[in-house]
Length: 622
Image 1: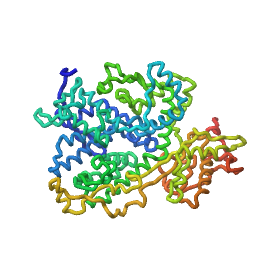
Image 2: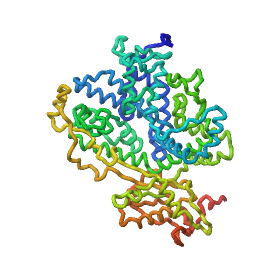
Image 3: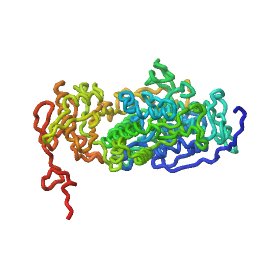
Image 4: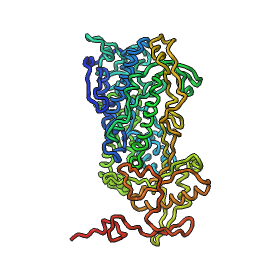
């Protein structure tokens, strides 16, 4: 109610420091400490930064909290350097504080296993749309229990928007809220917590410059990367170094030179169609620029990006574990429509923003957990343990496939990458223009049935997954360095202290550095076996026949094909993976016609007697 008084207290006046493996010392101002201690930020300590990559690289277990603290520190250092270097820009301590809070909160919207959760939500939307019969029982029980329909999923999920929701939740947890009617006043006091008049920049001697509602909108816009359209509604890359350290044991880049030498200058906007200032019309405005001598360093910076994406984030074992996790969550989502309580009427739950007062759903499945902040607060990487406990408590026959997924995960049995096509410039379109579902349907249509040891075996849609992977340097098929602006001469750098209207002009580099690649975009198609042992070789042969069929449609395509042996070690990247190999499997196929292969049993490499039986079945105990 208006005029209501709450028990409030000032934030601490001490600046704290913490140690970090990448940035050594990280400074935490009092206002940042308030947000850091809030439940939404503490939640990300249970989110692995790299999702399922730890299955391929055991040291990749750093969390979103570590990453967020690193981004906060880099944002603060960058803004502070510009503040000291170009005082005419009037970068205030409050501006720097806002950037630091934005860096800390930019990933609050990530779900379990980070980007894997986004892949799951996309798959859930598609499956509910194409196979509604799989969810009829769940939805009917939900409506019968609560008298409302299950809330529908949107076509796309953007974790940045959920991050903005969780920023509001973080404020609410300390008794504050954005006041849309008084944007230039301190935040609205809505409950017990931090004093709104003393939440902001500490000026010393118990004096504060409080953050306003407009400041919080600016923070949310930094996270969103665009202006807020309604009340409900440049990235600093700490993760390059932190992820490289986890995967390779050493940092691959040097961000310090970019932080040290960054400056604000005028420049022609490289993205006028998406720029909220240009609004589609190319023009000049202020932007971050760098000395021209850093062009090669910038190229190395983006090379680290594609290296990490290829070798870590989309490593075939990382992706196999991710695809299997998605299927596990999909299976759980079909059965557990009332898996998680939302705490809408819980007096002990963390305070939520007032715009959620009309929220009516008492329980929701994991696919809807992001819709309500109290619920999303409890959804992190531990969700699999919750699902496992639920499946164990209710050993029903319909949970059989889910139990298989859970057992395979416990035993470190993941999907396997069978084969890969790297798209070339000649004939590659014949492969890439097809959707993943179309490739699967074509393979099943032409190469689905085989005779193995006298038995007819059929490939089913659930036996394998087709994945289209795009690797780039940060700007799809464009050179990311061409999106940057550089100061050409020392005189330009000397003029950085000029008044704003007379700042030097930074330009796009005309000549690419020597370390620039010939192409900035790579496209690959990968086939993953979902039945780890039963049909691996079958899918390998089907892929080979599909490949030959596609090759007949284009003369001499320069695509690169790989087939991975079943016993190929996925734990780490082998040097041989960088070379083309297209070898026949150990079996001896006899082609009967275009749609049938007769396979003989293959000898195991661990068999000294040439037996074709699995090793475990050949063991004898004396």
